[in-house]
Length: 266
Image (cartoon, rainbow, N blue to C red; front, side):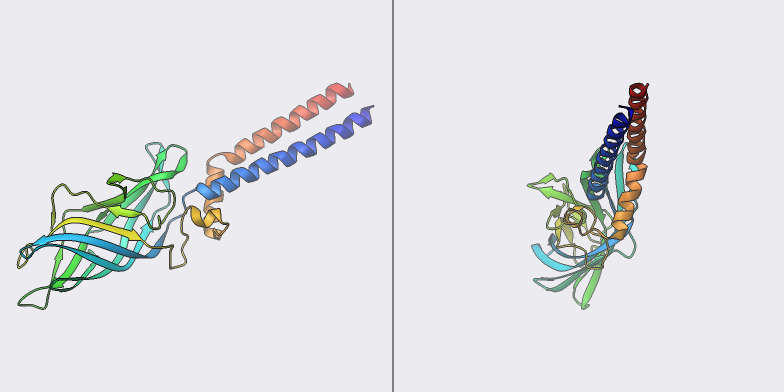
């Protein structure tokens, strides 16, 4: 009788441990799919549209080029996860009615922003924004070109039909980033052309091109997350207490089984 009870107890323990390992694996997989990536950067193709006013009138110009966005390690702020962003490089080319126009990241002012979780304990969905500062090279007379810049930030954020849009991956491919300017932002110096930006929008095209981790999700969901992403997710898994919870549950199951076995054997 005792041997039968012992054998049954061992089988129950094995089943319980397998179930615990299975649950722990699911928790780890979920954390990998939803944790922010570690610090790094993405270089992605970008298309943009800028509407300007000047002494020549109003004009909307289409641009295309490349942008690099750096991100910090995630940290907690106000009870939610936050990742700092910086537009470290930007090269856009387009054509105005007077000739070619080039937009680059400002050499003087950093373009900063953030990703911020919408809810505590959950990285995604999240809000995001970038405060853009640029240098603009445009045709001018009598000189060939003139370089202008903005000293008031142009804030852009993911938008949908004029309202802020929460994102669920980084970089958010094919999501429109737009600005809602109540007044235009002047490009300085104001002479010889008094140029003012009335709207700015852009779209990040596709995933990263420099081999960095794409962030959430699309990669993770199809099993393509690389070692760096997995390591960060594993660290977050530890930090968020899943291992402690797993060990607590394991101890509880083992202790309960031992107690039952002792009672039955006695």
